[in-house]
Image (cartoon, rainbow, N blue to C red; front, side, top):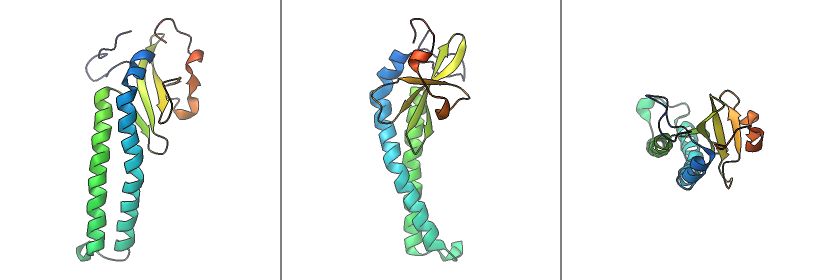
Length: 146
């Protein structure tokens, strides 16, 4: 299996080895996302609390600061998500820091699945299986590209 792009718009395909090789960078990016997301939610809540019952044209200084902070944090998160897309993987969950790496197995695309805090890529799932469909890589009956 190739680590090259699968074709225009189809994205990179990973082997288990190449997904694990990308983890030092991916894990740093995901750590940033997992750290930033609760801060963003807090800023949104602060804005909503300050704006409760107030029209937009009467925004308080506190509400403006919270709105600007939320916007700044959203921009940082978006930048992190863009970095992951450049690597070729897909971020799937703010709560648990889930990342899917597209892979080709037995002629079909599946996702190698990694969760923030795991030492390596040890699970996979079908494209439509999501986190509940995660299974150990040993269950994926393949040859040398597992």
